[in-house]
Length: 212
Image 1: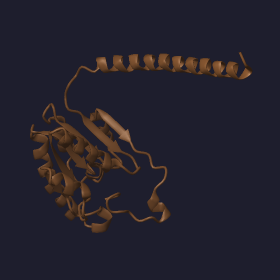
Image 2: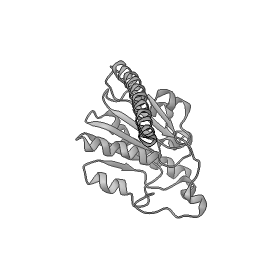
Image 3: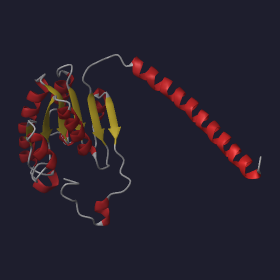
Image 4: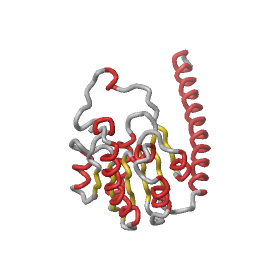
């Protein structure tokens, strides 16, 4: 055997060993995943809280709504704080039968009208309560709801009770910064979106079709 052939043979053997190690590792991982899946036997709707200072909370919530509709289920959306400008998600989802209740006052630092904001929040909440009581909705998104509880715009206990007493198979997704501890405790899943870097701080304007 030539030196070149020997080198090729050793390389091939080394690659086979790597493949075998990879296969064994993957098999162990699959066993763990399969065991974890097997333990999940409860079937019901859940409460998902997506909070934190990072970008993408509403995007994630609307992604869940789109997934729901894509599977042929019904969803509903209540939007707090946002709503003064064109909303790409709303344009798409309303056209596909998703009802929206929109506060449409903009951010609180823009309105500078606490009593007006509270009245607007209460109006949307009355619609949201109907969504939360209706078993036809597989998913209900409460976009930016965390602010309403943090600012005491809505009755905290009423909101928590409505979420807790919703239909068994309904999933609720709640987005926004600063989720209160009681909301996190009620939730089945809590995701904290971390802010490491943001184009806005570099002077880059938000883009239609990307950021809104």
